Length: 127
Image (cartoon, rainbow, N blue to C red; front, side, top):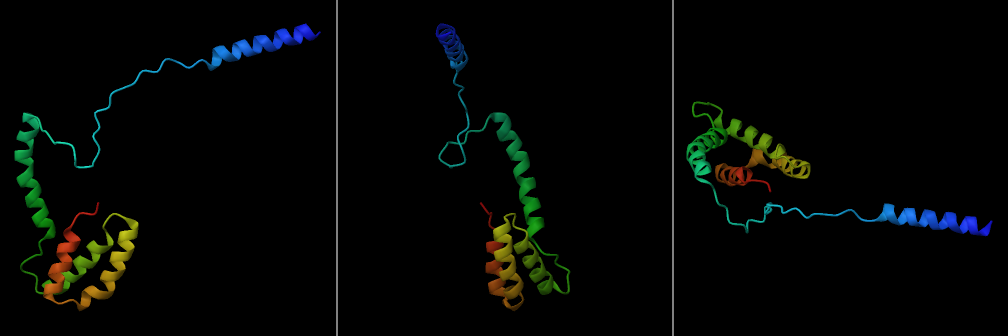
């Protein structure tokens, strides 16, 4: 009886060793360099040609996005409302809550110079 138990244990141990044997792992080379800004950015000739076409269009869209209508009789009020809205729609919940709350309370009382400074700040990218 003892020998049959020993044989069963040995068989199960042997089968466990074959199951637990690691599979052959091959390493893959990844080309991702991350967003650290340390990597050199090289563009192919095709990408350079596309960039020359796209960059002016993108700059025009950005200018249309951040400029105010020129023929608006309530330009200052429109500007303030726009800055408050953009302060609440940054893309990060925490920033939206903090900056949006501050803008709602303080933007209506800012003068032109302070509005220029705040608008420059709002136009910055959130990383």
